[in-house]
Length: 141
Image 1 (cartoon, rainbow, N blue to C red):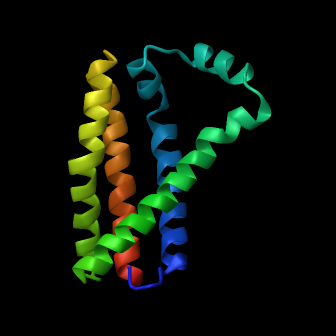
Image 2 (cartoon, rainbow, N blue to C red; image 1 turned 180 degrees about the vertical axis):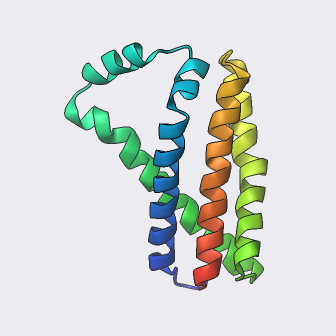
């Protein structure tokens, strides 16, 4: 990757993507729970039964995942040399379509999960990768 990564762009992109996810799942929380076959009450009971660390682990992992995705998209943009915001958006969308959507779809199909869960989670990850790609490309190397 040319020996360096613009860590500021990666962190800003990860924060933006994480905040997008927080808003997205706040808005679609009920639909997301229904797609999993859960209710607000069952989710609250699960959450209450977790330790303090276990309650926050998914949020921390989401942020770490966004950082890793940012570094990978940074590497792809470095190798392509396309440091313009729309190339970052397209790169994020291609990564989503080729890797994330396919993996979510396959995992949910084998797990017998509802198609709506794939739609909701898939759209979230599309937003995450487009945000990350757009911000990193816009901020440049």
